[in-house]
Length: 493
Image: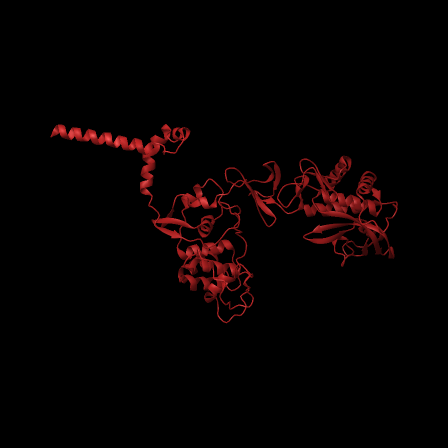
């Protein structure tokens, strides 16, 4: 019997070794190179710990639906939650099967909810959770906190947990007058439902899960919970998500844009954070804040001491021209004359300091231009000329920068090029002006700037006249005024 036991133990040992060898081997369809890479010595040594951890981690036993969505990697965390979005959230949480879209063939109780809008079915389905007797739903309006709490409590049946979360997030708010952000909506519902995201898995992710929400955000994991459908197992009051749950948020390398801004995602699937210029895939981009957000807005922007133009796809305009603006191979603006460029920069540096904002620099430069000497009179332009031609713009500016004197055309040319160097869209306008010197109007030039989508007049030569005539520039200001409230009457050609 002793011999038999030894023989049996030896046979079992051999069988186990054979099974282990089969388990460690590469799959039948793997290449030789894959098989070699699959069995490094370090990996074999670490295998027991790996098996032990797998044994500790429960297998997924339940599923959490997502109740909010992202758009191309953007969550819009600070956007106010609209009433239509609230209805969609409630539908997502209460629908029997989220694979089925909201109904679109039902009668809607609201007169301002059109069947063509994306939220029509969700609003119809969620109508019981909102106050009865209202004919208008106001779908695009931000929802008030109190209305959100009432609707969610009716839909989920968890008023105590929801109120507790509300007291934590809004300790002193008037629920009747307070709007909530998308982030706050996500947190309130996660708290009301008692959801506990798998923080270990979320923070271990090597790729960027959300473009516009940083891992440092206090409610980062709540947002991931809100947007990600996932299988999970409950353990000690927390969720352990199924392996691969975060794969749904992976993004390919490229540029992701939304509403005039965006992010660059590199080969690792991570957004390229940091500020300043970024070269990627043969193109150049401008990251204007530390989280890596880029402009994609067809607009001029200051970039250090330079000026750039960011196109609608986010790339910088390089080796090209646009509306009299020339950009070199680096994407930096130039007026087209190196000497005048230097004169403009020198003038700006002479009357500004590094700590000033762009608007403060614009004001300081305007005051410095209006303080130059009025002398001489250039020939007037005919009615066919609407803006000072570019070559003459450079000539007029060069003269006043070098001599310190000139007429309205020189004042206008100088300030126009200064404004452009500060990153403003500026034009040197030609026309007639009626002022105290001649109420019938005479040939004149001034500068138009586009500021916050509005056309503004800047006329340093008129304020130069005010200084000489003893008129108060605080009362008769021509700095950033509209045509309607300007101190003079202007007629553009």
